[in-house]
Length: 397
Image (cartoon, rainbow, N blue to C red; front, side, top):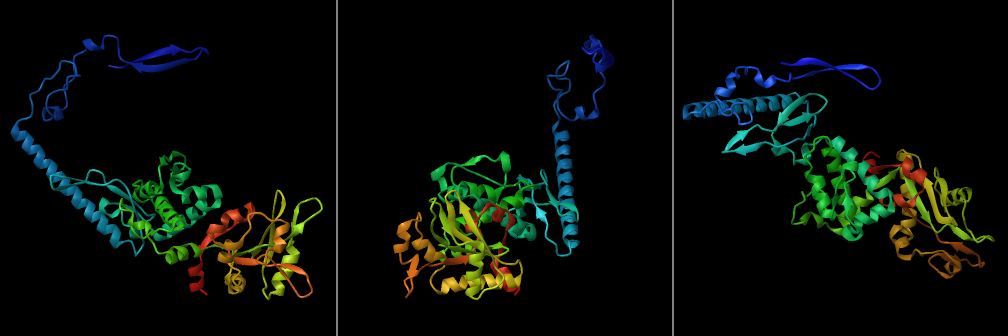
């Protein structure tokens, strides 16, 4: 019934298109396909209105019987596909994501099947497996976790927003990107990250779920629910989870490295060479110092960076243990750190000590840098380091 027409455009060119003829309603109707004879009356929107009677009980039963047979065959095919993929996986983990199946009238219905994306093949499985984190590709999950645990700790304002829960406004899911919606509190965000069904971003969401739980000191190994029982974790376990995530290559952060104020009023401190000399005097080798500066001068913070290998890690741990042994580690600095540095610092026995000759020396505090310290370091260091597990490195020593 279609006929080709031509239209002239404003630039003088011609374009052709297909359209129904003006008298298409007068054309005789083509015969309907056979499926209409078993599909009930012709819909009202077709010309001529309903033309066929409703299906008889015999036809209805025949169709239901064929439908059940089709569904049983489809489920059997699904099971065979799953078994085949499992038997040929060679022990590899697969990402099992997607929409779930439904259960209608007690019969399994393969309405929405789930796609297995593994790089070795594609199959379909039941939706009962999508909540089992153990079936996710563990290597991909670990990579996503270490990525997002860095993302949520890089910016101090964002980190505080998570830690203070709903006090600073609604939260967003960084795994969803721009399409993320707001969540009223951390529990709602945690539930979202754990229960996301989108196959393309599920591993990312599970990695973010673990990262958020570690940040909050919650139990990431316990599936979250409305009882919020997953939020209860002993303080020593929560602290161990956070301390295990170190910057790599390893870094030791040393505080209280200022020396006073210059004539221009700017704060001065130990330079890189002077700090390298002090570290060597303490008996540690291989570290390279980097003093941090801000708008008002020296920040009183010096980073000592070590090599990204086992020897570098051992030396960094030795330096951190040196400060901890003298009660000048992370917790000690947290208790006494001044909000601002000034002339009164020299009167604080926790910051300055006077030797027998009357010379004043700054008391240094240091510790191995973890992911929680990311916002303290300079931009260049923050972008270059990765986050890795201290325990995994210790196990390989």
